[in-house]
Image (cartoon, rainbow, N blue to C red; front, side, top):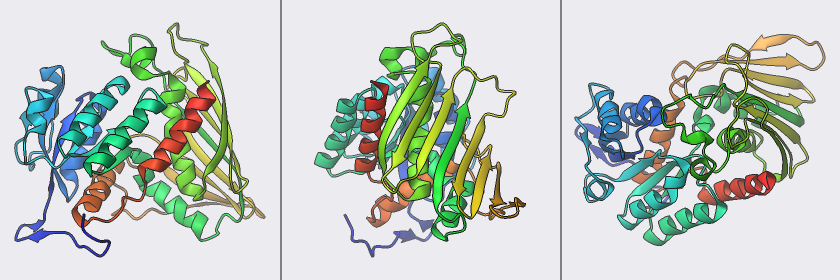
Length: 348
């Protein structure tokens, strides 16, 4: 790969755009992942594949009209044989990640894979090893890293605006009954690897580490099967400590009615407390405010409107730029494996 001082390849039409394939065309890929790639300045969706060709067709039909026409691939092998595809966005059910990522690596394609990485730490390690051996990039698709409010919050922490951060709290929840979808694989322990904990908590685990600029030291979990009668947990509490001493709790749930406030992030510091409301999720927006430690005064934190865009778009652009320039992606897979190992241990 090119050195750290490499620059984007620029053509007469502007910077070169990576060709992307999309594997797994459910609602996240259709409504957020693929449009994010297409709307980024450095990527274009070339092909889509799903075991259900109708799902792939719906994804292709919904791409922005300015995008060059993408096609529906008849098979994964057909897609991966296309020399015009540089990278693949993997959004299959969790148990499909390992086989798809290994196939992509063998074909020389870079990989952006949805979270959680896999249904087991062993499979997650296989995925990263396959990409390492093939000399291609691997990254996990934690889009919350790229939400404009969260990036602004990270700067507040770096600048010392909050003082010493002592605690963090996240409530990230939804309502997910058994009949939520015709193929509700998220409640199948074999296909999903778990329930609300393994689906929702990885976002918060990754995000808090990014915001604090610190590594988790330990995590413990309590799960529940309280409302929905399926084989995985429908709610959980995760608690942990960072190496720097801050402690955190994450409440996640599939049993929280969606009319309730259910997406809130708090960082509590000695100078100020930061509260992000409705920023966690697939879309941009939400609010960020600071509460002064002495006066209790609340002040809204403004977000640059140029940065307040789909976190999936910003994520695709950052990963594409890393590939095109040869620079490191800011979130290496070893970090993701560390978090996955802590989560798996907490689940046990």
